[in-house]
Length: 157
Image 1 (cartoon, rainbow, N blue to C red):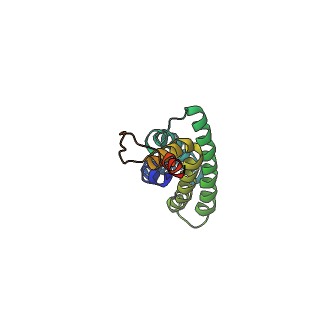
Image 2 (cartoon, rainbow, N blue to C red; image 1 turned 90 degrees about the vertical axis):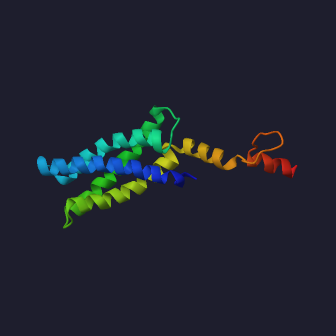
Image 3 (cartoon, rainbow, N blue to C red; image 1 turned 30 degrees about the vertical axis):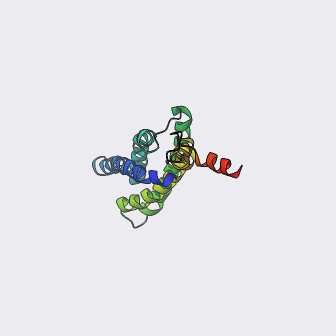
């Protein structure tokens, strides 16, 4: 199942989150930027790293970049809207902007993982799950592994 990819996704997310928080903090502290705008800028910059790392490392995608990138941008855009809405709500309230960003990061993390696993990189994840789960690892007399689905079919006949 695709949940086995979550540790890799979390690692990539930590790297991307570090990028976002560095940009957010730098813009707020050094440039005196608005926290919501600074968060959005950091989000976009971190998303580029996130896509490349998830494409290669987390999901080991074999899809062409065109379709995968369009799906990723769609999900990331919705993630950006979620992030900005949460920041607007919490940072404009009584919560410190970094604490507000922690809440936003948690919500967007879940959105991005399930969206990318189930849609952006779905065919790669589904194909790998089938290959890992459906191949019978036991050696047969012919020395070839047989997919479990084929084995069930031959037993039923």
